[in-house]
Amino acid sequence: ISNMAASRLEINFIRLLCRCESIASEKRGETEWRLEKYVGALEEMLVALRKSPSKPTPEVLTDYTRKVDFLKGLLEAEKLSSPTEKALANQFLAPGRTPTISSERMPASKIVHMQTKARCTGEMRNELMGTVSWFSETDLRHRGGVPLDERQSAAELDAVLQHHHNLQEKLAEDMLNLARNLKNNTLAAQNIIKQDNQTLSHSMRQADINFEKLKTESERLEQHAKKSVNWFLWLMLILVSFIFISMILFIRLFPRLR
Image (tube, rainbow, N blue to C red; front, side, top):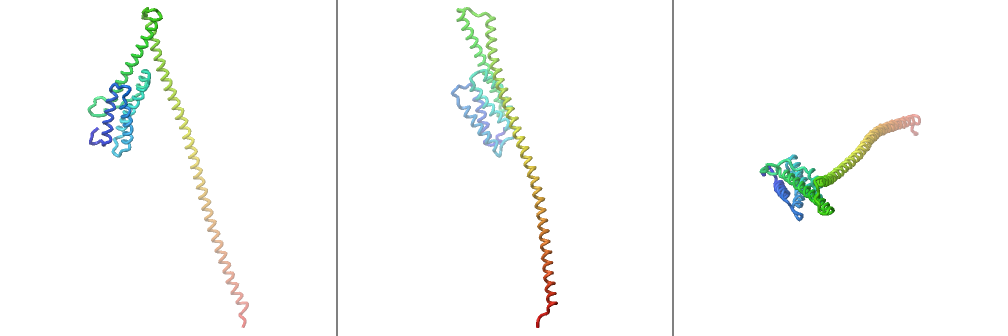
């Protein structure tokens, strides 16, 4: 990204993102706290970047979000206790698709992803070898130091592999149940929203009908009021005319006394 086209906030975001990807590529100890703090700061800067008047294009923002989510998922995966769980969680991580800076040939997040996968594979191999060694030592103690033959070693290795396979199946089943529950909750929410929309539509139609009825009644009342005024006016004219004619007849019939 060109520095001239990027805002100061975006430049600082890119620098911190590069720093986080660099730290993530290194082997960190349990006391390492910087990456988690830096990722939290990246989230805040990403929110501010979305609200900025000079924000980047939607495609660039999507890739930034993808990289920050990748780092968050990486931290959450590292907190898991079992190497198998770490490896499974690492499979679901999605690194960025484009380089953060122009000097990168491959996106740094993809390199971090490959390194993490290799590290998890190594930890699983070490755990597997440790378990096989434990089985071997236990069997040797029970047999008084007699070495295991190849068939027994293969059986123990199959048992360990089956144990890890069962763990992976359990995790996959848990994730499937979680996805199923999420789907059911989503469908239930959609049904509730659909019912609310139907109720709202019915209320709006009823309001329109009531408005039309009110308009009709108002017109009828207005016409009735006009008719009442017209009848009252004609009645007053007739009454005035009658009084006037009566007075003339009275004067004619009864002349003024001398």
